Image (cartoon, rainbow, N blue to C red; front, side, top):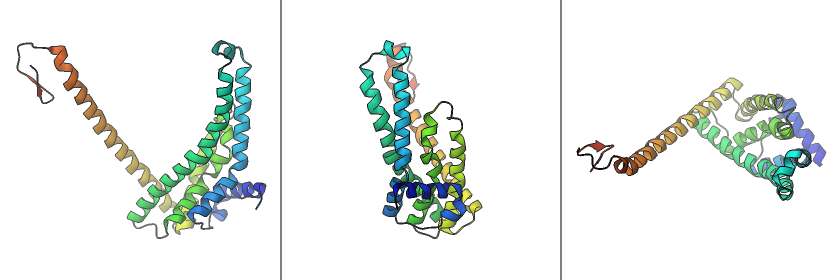
Amino acid sequence: MGITSDLKAGLQVMLHPGDNTKKPMEVGEAYSWYFKVTLIPLVALIIVALILTSAFTSSPIYSLIGLHLFGIGIASAIIVPLLFVWVLIPVGILISAGLYHIVGTWSGVFKGDFNKTLTATMFSKMPTTIFLFTAIVPAAAAFYLLFAVWELVVLLLALANQQKVKWQTALGIVVMTVVIVAVVIGVVVTVFAVTFNNAIVNAVLPHILGNNGFNQTITGLPVR
């Protein structure tokens, strides 16, 4: 398949997810397909970023910042989209698919292998990745939210097709995964915050209070 044909395949997944997310792929095949489909969108994103950078450099504000930032801006307009589309998003797909598959398998819902879950997750990224360039255009940024919503629709239909379950069941797995991740993050953040707060109190507060004549205990340590 050519580059335009690959992009057309990605658009078909986006526009008709119920019919075009049934093909199972191995992990390597899925990632190869992703890189081919996202090549033109990545170039479009870089072009838009370069145009916006050029527009910024021609504004009066830029003259106050300094011309030495021009090269940094141009390099960032190329490197940042490249890293985001071809590094961060693929890694995010792998992590998300892993979490969905763990919860789906643990709950006894998913019977297929991990390849199917990853393929479904890869399919779901088509709307937001193909049209990612609209997210950095001020006039179209709000419109990009529609692609984010449609990503969830594609995910549910793709998981349903790949794992042979109903889309409502797939929705339950996705919600359960989000809740579990949120709870784990909340617990970790709370434990870290409490530990950090106690460390600060124990290290600083005794020095602030000094020897006030009382034999008290603050957070488990005596104040001398």
